[in-house]
Image (tube, rainbow, N blue to C red; front, side, top):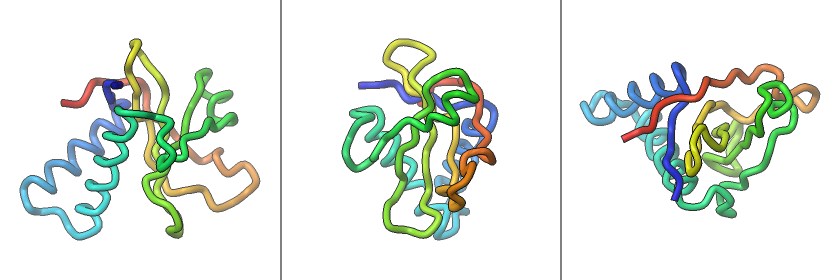
Length: 125
């Protein structure tokens, strides 16, 4: 099992805001669906980051830019602009830190140039 951490400030703030809207009943249909998908992806990552349903793979252009292996996993498949979670192993042994959430890049040339990732962050609880 891996401990799931959230990158700061973007991912931590995004998840806290989304959870708050869902818990308070103020979430719209899209927020609820995204909460469910991200939660499921986090559970799957914590149990097995190589789970076939996640289709996790390294994004070498992001690894080179950030100086560590950056992985991409699917939130969903067969959906236009399907969501992707970007993550790294660490900072501690047994940790995975989610550092980005983006729609799948559509353009084939330099498709990951626009992706901005969070810094390492805090364990979620």
